[in-house]
Length: 470
Length: 136
Image 1 (cartoon, each protein chain N blue to C red):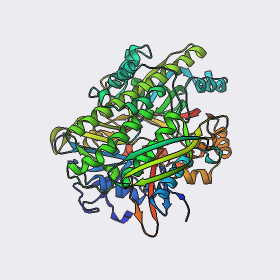
Image 2 (cartoon, one colour):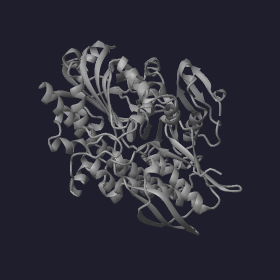
Image 3 (cartoon, helix red, strand yellow):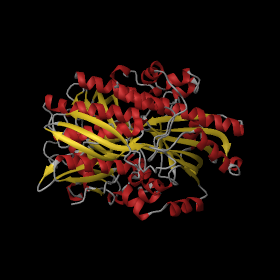
Image 4 (tube, rainbow over the protein chains, first blue to last red):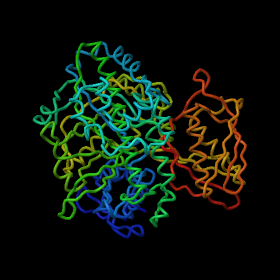
């Protein structure tokens, strides 16, 4: 597979033609600029093509501009499937079900916190459990854990970990109603139980950020964002619960794919008809993991808010919370007909053109790599037409973790951050090079492409001043 | 023949494991996984855990075996230094030697979210080999 297989449709759209791999049912579409094309790996093109072979896929197998090689689906992949003819694939969601991002905005400005920044970062590091195998502060009964799985962020709010307004500012109000805790294995519950309210490790983080630039002043006003304002961004998911749920169903689906005579170019694409007992069970369990993840981020927000209240006597409002590893049942227009489809977003973010709570396009939160800018964007009608209401999810890796560790050091990376006046806290210095800006594509170019394609519009640019790396 | 070697993967961790027979292949793949999780030279083989399982193919058996070790690491905090395996037909019985993680003495490496089925294909030329991708 080479770049030569791609057919340029227009400045930012590259097609992977049907026939690139045997059995493709629709073409692939990769959204890229010439500047980002050089980062595109042949294996990622192959994965976009492989997804196009799955039964019931609608229109295109899509990849956002932050695309890179994953396992099964590419990271940055979006694919929608017919509810009766189509499939559900755990590999199209990923192990970290509802890994996502949330943004809180304070009433503080940079100059008010900069002197006490180190103490603030210490307090946040203390309050939010992070790092390898981190555990939360809550001890849940089996019954409570089941409520987390079935009710999501609603459960957290009912227990005092936030307010009802928070739910209006979460994708799907922080709860998928299809969740069924009885479809979650005892092992997944065992793994999830101690970890609720913890960040985890890898690319998960908490950042204290400052609004550096307003790109669309009217929408920024609607979202409540002002230049110089201090915000907090959280990136985490469903922890061991989600990882185990995905593992459990992938095992089941290995055999079930055969049962339904679905031939696969990669075993990680294992899938079953959405309208089958196995499909319905997976969807109910995946929804439970998604609810766990929303609860997880809601509980961490509570502790973040507590720190800001104690230190500055200020409140932090939830701007939004979005998932970027999820499958959703949504209504979209396909060939002029409005129909329900299962949209898989694997390292891609929902970007709907309407958000009822704000009355404008849905807020989209795109984190950059550690030490670089993050963005708040707004979903658009164009996204509804071309990408099943989806956009990118981040910068996208270019260096493997292995080569990042080889070519970069903790000392070098932390000195670079220091030069940019960014404080960093972590339990694991050796892993810091893996998340360095050099390991990722330039976020500004990724945002440029989604803006030019029109699948989301930049509203504000935020730069970090303090990082807790999980 | 190396026991295993790590290979490049943009987002995740991938390795190739080798073995002159299935027992050795499974043990070497386990060592590759454990050394992704923790600095293995500091783990002492002082406690024993036994694992028994069966599956419908060697690939699925290998997947289940690695997934089980990962769960043992996360839930029990038990790291495996070495293991003795006996694979008969599609059944596996293993004695795993290692110890519980003590953060004062041990150094953790990566948090592995899961073992994937990506490109999972058990091959045999003169020796057995397999490629495994871990989601980190």
